Image 1: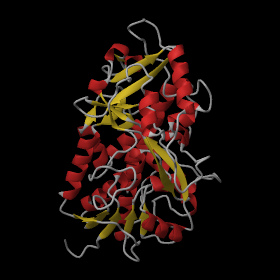
Image 2: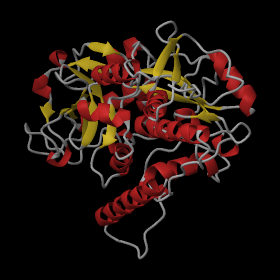
Image 3: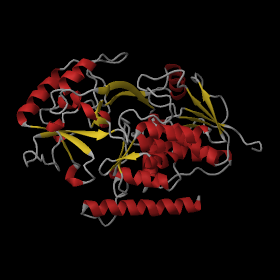
Length: 438
């Protein structure tokens, strides 16, 4: 490789892996630093790259949904992560869910076998003083590097994130469960645990009074929790029926034993292609492990459930990006330094990967002396980048893909399905035009 500058990428999560891939595919050497397996964060368990923690779902698959549009935009920009997700998909109704182990294995294989990528295992404790660098160390950045980032950026914001438990299928009492997707979308991809009113009331009381695990280094009485991954017990405290209209909503489901819609339903989504493991959808939690077994065991079908992973809660950090970053994810005061991933204020697996894609592409453009690639805000990727760089809110919060952040279409389309389809079509047209002229 003729005298091309090496780019440093810190972190081999979703954003870092995507950034490294994009840079390497452009013909530049990449030195990718990953602290695993020498050191693990509190939430990570696997030595593989792009490890999924909270869920194995990458949200809706259809293009006329916000999450589906985001993934389609990434596909059209040759995303490694979306390609690997498509190859490792497991049944999940209208969602794109993956076998998380196989997904990580495929990403790891692609990265480690790329001739332009050199993987460096070990913790990074200092931000490189020069050279183009992408920091994608994640919301669970090690304390030493987090301190470096804080000093560089003048502070970071923090919140808590939680993961749901995973159980084995063979341990479920299927006499109290049924398989179906909401509104019959998909091929019975979910296992459903219905509850009647009495069962729900007893479960609810146990849930809101159960003992929680301690949270260290933060205000344990009132931790700041991100809405998109809120612990089920915290959500339940908002009201008796809050979770029944949330993750336990029974709409679109009918219990074949009664012929009626249940009072509440707990859904389990497959974790792997073999369908031997299932996660409790929406059951992110910080309950102590014995309490999880006791309280969740009150759900019909889960009385004797075997847990392969209990739910956990951990700290996440993100930057005050609108004060720090440009829309190409470069730092305003150090334009050769890029940030990517959830720490930039994008929330979600594919949202994080999309920021890595753009950071990687723009790192290359900086090396080549080209203008930054700024996608139009009519695209989902462009609008998320705009949120990170220019959100006007005084209380900056992470943002996931949603149609509310895209400019409206005039004249207004009243039908929501038609409106979303039009927004998606416009986004893909504008993306194609931007890439053609980039």
